Length: 231
Image (cartoon, rainbow, N blue to C red):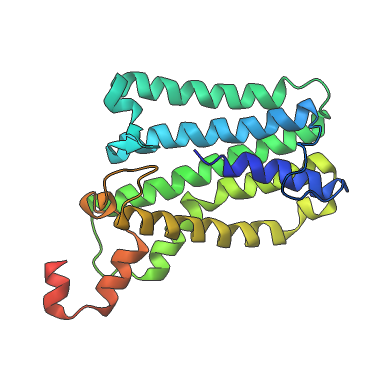
């Protein structure tokens, strides 16, 4: 994968702790063990959610390879996802040089993100079971803000909290990450429709699975009655 979320944690910590600005070609800076572990934790949580999401959606490919449940069976894939969740929390709490209050705050942020992710995924699956053909683009974006944005918020918050920066407790973090997460999901939807050779391999999986995407909502919004019936 792209490892965007752990990069956000590392980059935010680096910037918020007042270190020198880095440019392309600079050597990788020294990363404290506690910061590295938290960055790995957010990636472990993210990968766990992908494994379980692929099972729920019965996706065929992930990162250009067969999804884990197709390759090893549903039971093993669920177990792998659960293992990654346990690994994520161990990475946070087993760090000796991390202040206990900081550790608790980061774990709380990531668990909150996990719950909101499940809320968003649950809303998506509920819509698939009982489609509402009056879905608006805003409805789809609200699902995105639950399903995709929380992990970005946890990653950004963790970097700020590790650096002891006051911005960690600002509403700006959640507002910023809400937009980033929604934009990230829209880009993902576009790649699914046009085919993503580095990831899903097969295009149109969102439409085939009847997911409440903003693309579907926009198509329904602008379609004639005949076109809506076709859709």
